[in-house]
Image 1 (spheres, rainbow, N blue to C red):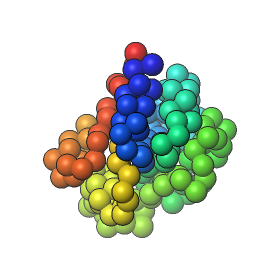
Image 2 (cartoon, rainbow, N blue to C red; image 1 turned 90 degrees about the vertical axis):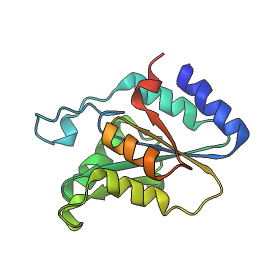
Image 3 (cartoon, rainbow, N blue to C red; image 1 turned 180 degrees about the vertical axis):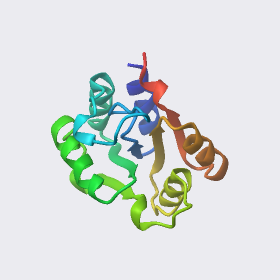
Image 4 (cartoon, rainbow, N blue to C red; image 1 turned 90 degrees about the horizontal axis):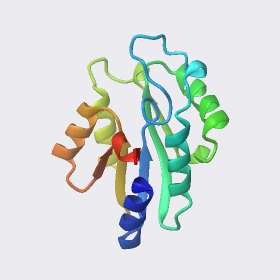
Length: 153
C-alpha cells in the first residue's frame, strides 16, 4: 500500500510518467545466470502493485529496460505479454546495447533517454540498479527516482 499511496500523492499534484525497470523489479535477475528471459521468474507482488498504480487517473505507465542483444527485445516483450500485459506495447521502451557505442553504460542510456523526453508531466523512475539511480539523482534533478524497495510494505 505504501507504493500505491506514494504514487497517488504524487499524481494528485501533477500528471505522472512512471517508468519501471524490468530486470530486478518485475522479473527476477541473477547476474550469474544466462540471460534467457523466458526463464525469468515474475515478481508477482511487485507486478500487482505496479498494475494497481497504473489504474490511477493521472499515471501513465511505461517500461524502460535495457538488454545486451537485439534479439532479447522480442524475448522481453513475450515475457511482458505473459506476465505483465498491462504494460501497453506502445509504452515499452527496451533498448539494446548491441547497436550502441561499446563503452556506453546502462546509467548513461537511461539518463539520456529520460532527459530527452519533452513533457509537462512529472517523470518518475522505479529501478533497482544503484548506479542508474545515483546517476539520475546527480544529473537530472527534475526526475523523481524510486528504489525498488519502495514496493515493499
